[in-house]
Length: 469
Image (cartoon, rainbow, N blue to C red; front, side, top):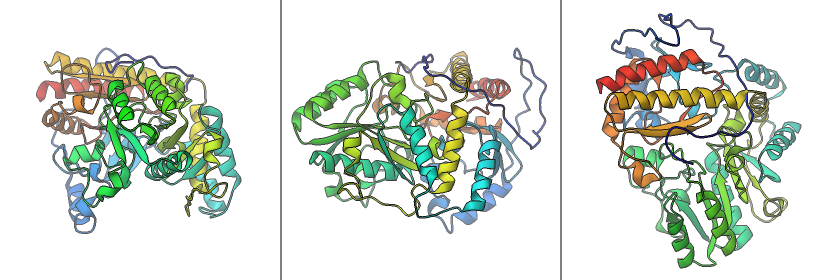
């Protein structure tokens, strides 16, 4: 697997048209050969500025998650009013083609009519039970059927909760304490994981985090992604002491970075030989790059997996699961305690079920592969034609690129990129009606709602912006 443009996707997929009730501003007539674009004008964000100014008096930094603040790309965030299909709309009436997708969950498109209808029907029955419901069984059955390593699963409320729970589980099952993670991989903001954590930490240029006691991270070891020698060195120095290894099988929190051909299998072999468990953090890749997640795509089955984003269809959700003998350690079946008031809540289960049903229809992943491949090829070619050093790639509906020479194999390579240029690129694309992740250290996402017209317009905007930065 390489981080340059072409990646082969396995799996069988679905094409869904975007359903957008709001008018486009100045919809242009276009053909596949040429695309008429709107003239570049100064983006009007008067209302967004007013709302954000007020937010800063009440919310730390004016946001409820750091990357939303636009700190690394300049300017200030636009304030969303609504979303539909592949589009998002701000409070000033601007329309954007969205490649963030609520950071991954909106894989069938924003406010999908089928998902909405299922949610509305469930609301009338109740939004939270705090008791078992059959919807939990139904979603569990679907994810266990599709994900190779899953024999049992526990639903929680976020990716962070899933990852901190699976860490406790690995320690409980093995009787060991140490954890191996990889520089630039993000697994939520639990203390043990805030070591070389990439993503928002890298975006803001902060140390991993004050307020994290040294004792909390003393048992956290790090290796370099795509570097098996570094993994071997860590295991050799900590023989018989490592409870588990956790990693993003495809990195999305240092930008998009795919594993080399033998990396994932090599980690599995090293961990297994030492008696450590292997966990794939598929909060981002789960059901996005293949029907059976990254583990199906790459043919490597871990012991445990964390999930989130897509399985909640846009509602707060997380999950962890794996081999039955390991999962039976979790309370009340076993002694490892973990609980949650809203875990398995009926709204998240309903949205997740409908989303996974849509993804299971013929043509879904083929559509994601086709449009995402065209998108990243178009962006890379636009960059090269304008004389920029660019590299990037994609798998199915996940993509990314860097302003740098050569292949990016790990966070250390990603850190060499021109982040100032990325900031100018981001602003230019925003002014052309394209909404991208406001960080050079984040992957991008497409959806079943993205159309060929969306891709045409985005590539044309990319050509114009690449020439101007």
